[in-house]
Length: 281
Ligand SMILES: Nc1ncnc2c1ncn2[C@@H]1O[C@H](COP(=O)(O)OP(=O)(O)OP(=O)(O)O)[C@@H](O)[C@H]1O
Ligand SMILES: [Mg+2]
Image (cartoon, rainbow, N blue to C red; front, top):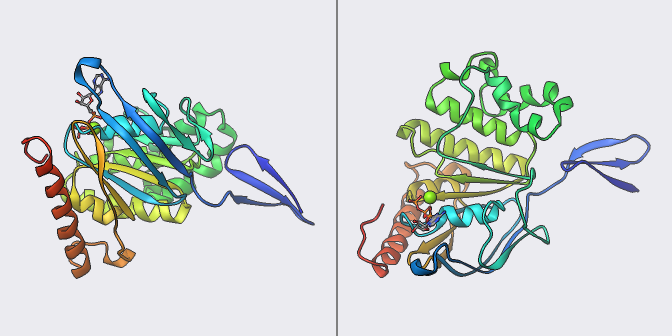
């Protein structure tokens, strides 16, 4: 059977009839002996990080304010270069950003006067894939539960809905890796919870690798298969723990959720107490 790669996200297998299907699995990430210093006088922000993330895994980076979570995420995205060591994605050293991975921030950064559909299509547009917009955008708006809002202006939506538009914009180009930097922290608890559950479900359905930065223990337990707990000054991996909950246990009322949350809180507190005497953020 002949297999030809088409663009980045699809492949065609030539049998009697061509079949289009997504490439299975998300990005494989390897971080090798990574250290980072912004200013010599401040010393190392990140120190000798070494870990791998398997394709399709959901991993939370948990740590106190200032421990270097965002810096590490920027390095995974190729937006910042580590002063030592490297990030390797699918076997290639990361030297800059790529359309195969997308980053989402706390602010959704939409164009308020543009429709939901137009905002969601921007990622495809920037990647010169406008031919895919007509088919892909309705699909992706349905996936994030915004189908009926396609023609509304972004400014008419709630904060949670706007974050869903940003999510749709990120997902439309079918990335292999989604990097989230505390994207739900400005939302109320109820909206935050439903987005956390939906984003995990979507990442699992699409098979993409998801890395989420958080300092919220319950967010890590709801979303992640695995949590890397960072300590500060310099940022190091103090603990690497698996959250072995089924999807239906990933809600605050489940007994096993509560025990995993208590266990992770204990790890986090122990790590924080090992750091300088700053309060937990
Ligand atoms: N561009 C930069 N230039 C100099 N120092 C920086 C820069 N970006 C971050 N830092 C410093 O690096 C350290 C880690 O910052 P980073 O933003 O990665 O932390 P964080 O864990 O994401 O914190 P928070 O939870 O508050 O977002 C901080 O001391 C910060 O002041
Ligand atoms: Mg940060």
